[in-house]
View 1 (cartoon, rainbow, N blue to C red):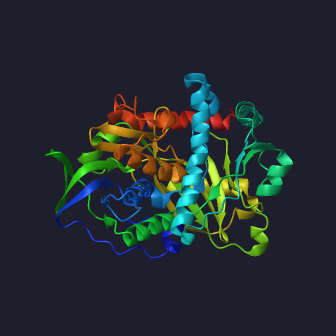
View 2: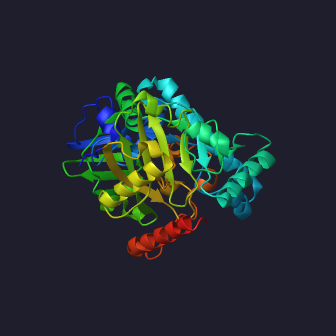
View 3: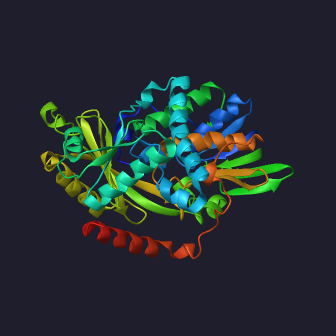
Length: 427
């Protein structure tokens, strides 16, 4: 089923793609037609390879077409935490890679002329919902200043947050100027269109149901065809449970449903009161709430939906939160409601690398994959070419199946309930 998203309602036309029929050959088979897979395919085409992308549903049907389009250099894991666990050099490398991901996204859009992606790097505000959370943001800003010698993220006062967002709810915030938003489905469709122009091959409605070694390569079987490839890249992220072919990746991830609402078009006088600074904003709650303006609408999203389908309760909760953050929007009509899966990992970091000889993957973006997926798609493609790309702590070592993965759903509910309780009491 196609999500009832603002992106689907406003996207440029999708390229006309067919499903895989009959037997084919290629250099590299890419399983997954989202940001990661498409970025990997572009990198391979530039290197003179002949990749084929196989998407189980329609192009960007998963997280790439459902996310909020928030572009940020941050990871879910803190840099201070990385340094405490892995050392200063590793944390600084990850800090640098976060911005390398922004650069990879920007360069991709500029090089390919993807104006439809509507990329705007107007900044990101992390808004503190309590004084305790504000102290945490200040610690992050201090770490960046102390360890990098720069000011890529700076503290802003309660009054500045109110001026930039229009909300009186927050105690202050952390402003990251090199961040922003884009139209995610347009970005994916632009990547696909330009890949086809460069003679890349894409097939949709072609789920890979089996991957078998054959000779020096791999045979990927779909319901109506097969593909013989020298190598395979898996880019299925939170949707790795769709077929048995990616079950081993699914067991390393915790899919968590995230929901988004989009308002009706707002009158100019109302828009003037909501996010007048043009930044994307997210709060510091454990069960994150984030919001941004898209044209004359506001979209508002967050964690907290459970199960395999859209949740009416989650959407009602988002609309109540929207009215709390912006009382002027309490009674506006909601035109679009949709949700999708975020792929969480136990260490809150994405992971990419080599599954075994000839098979590679990049997954687990923890809700921050718009820029990172482009970067890791390119890096894992470089790895398949025999190069030595930079992954930092995202390298695959230690990324193992989660114990008792079959019982993850009750665990996710319990953990989410505990985090919601901590948010309520202001911790």
